[in-house]
Image (cartoon, rainbow, N blue to C red; front, side):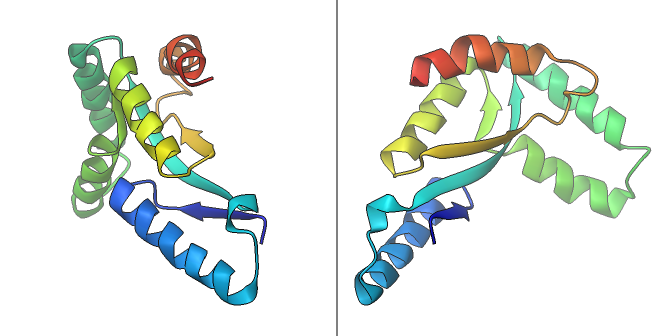
Length: 131
């Protein structure tokens, strides 16, 4: 394989990377030649209040679309994700993932169809800080 995609939470990413490294040793594959990526839901705001406002908006937007028993787990997963926060918090989480060997982040902005400010903030502050 040339690519793999792991859950981006640090403990899981590290554990899966260790398993992959062991398999690579077993079959003689260069572990460092494999791109390790992670999937992220990104909810980013300039301030903590902006982040909470976006999360509240997302919840309100999803409420009429999902049954209550589906809404709660989805919202908990979304709001508790590693890339929910201010640019500084998101940069810290991505830097931590990079230090664990993640070289490719797949980013989904759940509010993008209605508000592009999260993508713009990510592009203007997060990407340059990690380049």
